[in-house]
Amino acid sequence: MIAIIIIGIVIYLLLLLEWIYRSGFIHAEYSRKIAHVLACCIAAAASQILSRDVFIYINILFVVIFLYIRWKKILVSIEGVDRFRYGSVCLPLGFIVIGIFLYSRVYEMLIGLAIVGIADTCAGFVRYRFKLPKSSWIAFVIVWVCSFATSRFIFGNIQSLLIASLVSMAEVLSGYGTDNLTIPLVYALLVYFFK
Image 1 (spheres, rainbow, N blue to C red):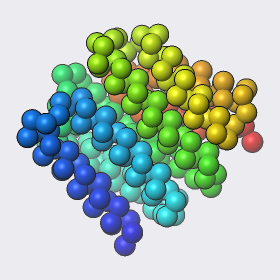
Image 2 (image 1 turned 120 degrees about the vertical axis):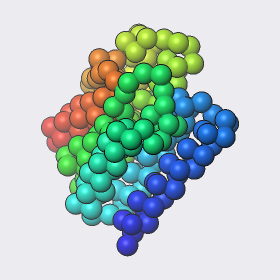
Image 3 (image 1 turned 90 degrees about the horizontal axis):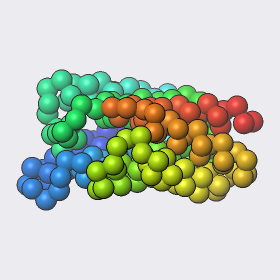
Image 4 (image 1 turned 30 degrees about the horizontal axis):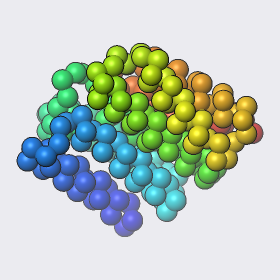
């Protein structure tokens, strides 16, 4: 029952963002960033109340939903940017990766979701706002600072430096929205092998 409520909330928020976008209140790039942060927040909350399997199944469902949305071009608020991207499909895949490796390690999982939600969004916002290329050093620095600051909540300096450096490289080197998968993958593998 809780899983159905969570799915309903996500769909409601996606439709609300679509309505806000089509009403002319925000640009598609901003609606994508809002959806990105909301998805990470909902995933963090869901990870605390759902079983690991249900969490993963819900994200598999959203991978299928977003593939269908891309194919039919339904949600222009998310898919209506002026470049081809896989970010909406890769984000639930990233949640699946974090769930597979870190679901039983609550704080590590929440930090991973926070890094995906905060660092990636901040870098994307600055790149869009100032028309910077994906591989700019500014994006690297933004992701590095956000990742380091976020990971310091539970990790030591050396671990946080390693997380921030490798996550930042994943952000800069991943194209077409695949950073929504590569950042969680790099983070989850690092943290999984820390202990």
